[in-house]
Length: 291
Ligand code: 9D3
Image 1 (spheres, rainbow, N blue to C red):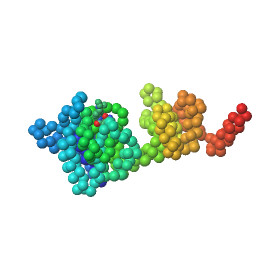
Image 2 (image 1 turned 120 degrees about the horizontal axis):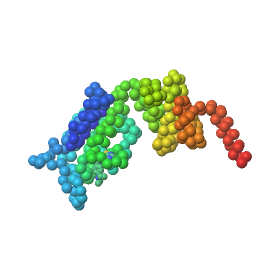
Image 3 (image 1 turned 30 degrees about the vertical axis):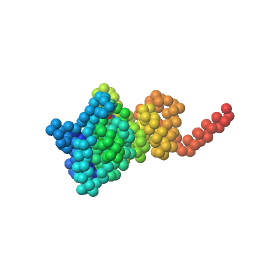
């Protein structure tokens, strides 16, 4: 069973994943669980204080360790009673960048306790004592950990077998294998030609499934090479690119992005057979030697 125990001053926020969309449906069907623990409920003073001024001065407030620790103790006890992992993940701008591989590995386990900070930060003694993983969503500034936690939980839950329907899950499998860590190709739906005369790429209406797959792959490569060249390098290192992919990327480099985009408007760029490619490569070598 996948279960998250979230420690947050704003537990209502988490209805975003428990009540809406695919994660909401999966939650309703009991495929995963979420419990929230509010540090404010574990304060002992009349003002229910959860923060205080930073030692050493400076702007903002720091979350007190004691209410966090009391909330954490309850969350740990609840999880231990169910025999679940008690890893403690802190969402923090200083954490390890979150990615699909991390989502995959969390989806294999039974979830975690997720700490969401507010204000300028959390008393470091709490972090040093209890946190096992620190995760960031990227290099931008949020007001707290809650929205990062929502994104992380959404990414993990949708990987749990059965959460997505069959069609979607096939697409999910392909994030790393089929798409080879590349960006997705563009999508179209009806009408085939709209009011403004904009038409759908012809190949998508052709019924030629091989040509469609080839066109989508080439569109993925074109988009990824243009916007995220580091993903191409990574896919190459992982062995996720085929000889056909490499041929297309060579064409892209030799002919230029504009040219290839125009050629790819309605149909895939034809890829010569393996033999023809080999022959062309040999001829090129010979030509170079003559010079
Ligand atoms: C003056 C220094 N502060 C602003 C840069 C540090 C700071 C403290 C607390 C910045 C952000 C936050 C609240 N953010 C999160 O808790 C957070 C976060 C983020 O801000 N960006 C990306 N991923 C994450 S995960 C948690």
